[in-house]
Length: 339
Ligand SMILES: NC(=O)c1ccc[n+]([C@@H]2O[C@H](COP(=O)([O-])OP(=O)(O)OC[C@H]3O[C@@H](n4cnc5c(N)ncnc54)[C@H](O)[C@@H]3O)[C@@H](O)[C@H]2O)c1
Image 1 (cartoon, rainbow, N blue to C red):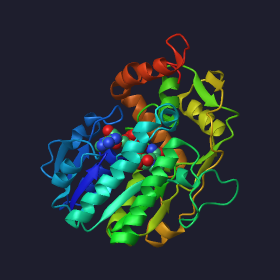
Image 2 (image 1 turned 180 degrees about the horizontal axis):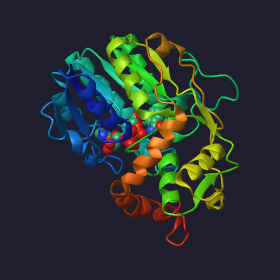
Image 3 (image 1 turned 60 degrees about the vertical axis):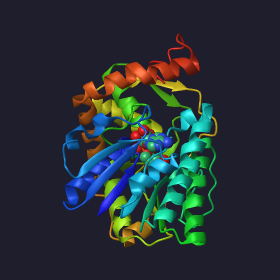
């Protein structure tokens, strides 16, 4: 299969590119990525010399470039997105541009060039908070922040292009991912690296928000299955099946890093902070997928990875991430170090 992966230099995309090259010897992958702050060529340094892999630096909103890159593709898998809720609260424009207009640009190119498959990578956050039970693929979307609203926009477009033009779109909506190469602004790598550096762990609100954690390699396997076996026009939820309150997760990270709970620093809750997400994943299970990495062991492996890869995350935390938080909260707020 000739695959175009967009956003492949980010967290999930880079794990997915590695997964495809390792499990499908005949596949070729072109990675189109704009290399925003979250895109890092170092995430794929180990496959750079693989003749089956190539990289193009560019924007998914650039129609001419997109058409050029996907011309002979058998499938396009779109990971490219602005992905951090906190940033969407202060700079929503870029989220709307990439997560809606970028998806539209890809869909138009896929339609024109008759690419046989388009997989849009989405999130359980489009369903909004669920107090009880779990979201089905057919449930209405109730996004509550600019990130999830823009992702919902991309989802609606992908499904509309299937209904209107028979553009062969599929969507995956996964729960929160964790694992190697995740930018250290997201809660698990932020807390692991802060703990390793003996810095406070800034816990939102009462710490009772619940997320269903999914190891990134399990998500990659599920996306790969949907890509090859999924049905056009369908949505597939992908949940880890492991719901944890943030406070419990925080304590577990401190236990694994052997640091004291006094590092926990409660901070004012994020506006519109959804209490709980949970997805019903029966449909992707019926396709033949099940998570293979138990949460406890995967979290331990993730802590070990960050412990062993300080050279990967230290420059990110002391560079772009610190500058961003200083711009938002001021150089002397302390938030630059402990966002
Ligand atoms: N991380 C999670 O827990 C999670 C959970 C569910 C769904 N998702 C979805 O999975 C996808 C990947 O998430 P992630 O955590 O790997 O994100 P990430 O922020 O780590 O990576 C995003 C990548 O997209 C690239 N990119 C951004 N704008 C672009 C543009 N206009 N053109 C080309 N490239 C661009 C960035 O350079 C980066 O490499 C996103 O669509 C996200 O909504 C993420």
